[in-house]
Image 1 (cartoon, helix red, strand yellow):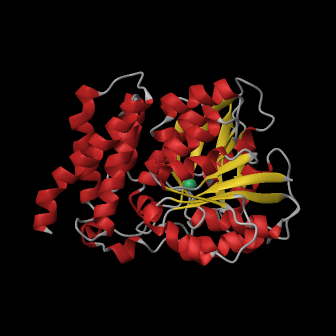
Image 2 (tube, rainbow, N blue to C red; image 1 turned 90 degrees about the vertical axis):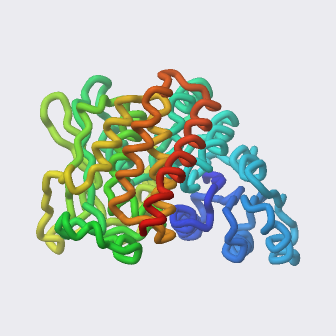
Length: 392
Ligand code: MG
């Protein structure tokens, strides 16, 4: 039985983690829950899973949460704000902390969990993309495990089980191609938020669905794979695989290629991150190759999707540049979701912000440097977007 603390419990990763916990109550116990501001759902989750400690990030919602579970006995410890989320991350009873918070907000609680000796089921990309220079030494120092919950990194991690040191040559990350994979490049200028939110294969949160449509999601995953598996950027490639059945592959030194396959369902990589190194028997629908018929692949189109190259460049620059890329992307995507800028403005804004940051970048940043770079990039992107917003 593993005890889980769950950060971002009302989001896409959070609710799917709770589905797993509800399905396998003899394997997993929920000891901590933290959510942003969806107090109605959080209160339901508290009722169902009876955690010891609960936090709501938006402190204004704490009274509503208190009222919604006032009849429960015993009462969980109730906290608010980022400090509260950090306490849930460090919860003494937790074995594994699931980091399902989107964005840089997940970084500090994840660091707190690592320092408290928790294994991390990593579903927050920014932990490594922005935070790797600080997070990786801490992981080593505290002897904790970073267990990838993202489907691609889980696939690579699963394929790597049993591969000896020095055996890995290359990583092949698969990409669905996102909402616009079959749209001609000249039509991309006109696409709307509603169009971009229609992902062909995966059900995910809004921000990551836009990242899939721009393929920035894949670019961010390249950086994450570099840090997680210690593979240099020349040995990480992207291949478009529209069916999203092969979740990624590794090529070994002898040219043997290993892949992990499964339906496009986040619960499987999540389950492996939670159960590692064990395999839990499920009654989920088995993969049926004959029913699938075809698995196809194509070259990624870097002209249509400049975000991938921007991510490779930021990854190679290292230091705070991945944090800047990520923050500029978050800001640009937020503006697009608010219908203030156009789809193609997203990569333009990110590229300009990264260019302006170049001379300030440093190779061995401390946490304060990373957080400052993140702040700077958000502000810079927002400032640069003003003429675009006015023209939109
Ligand atoms: Mg992914």
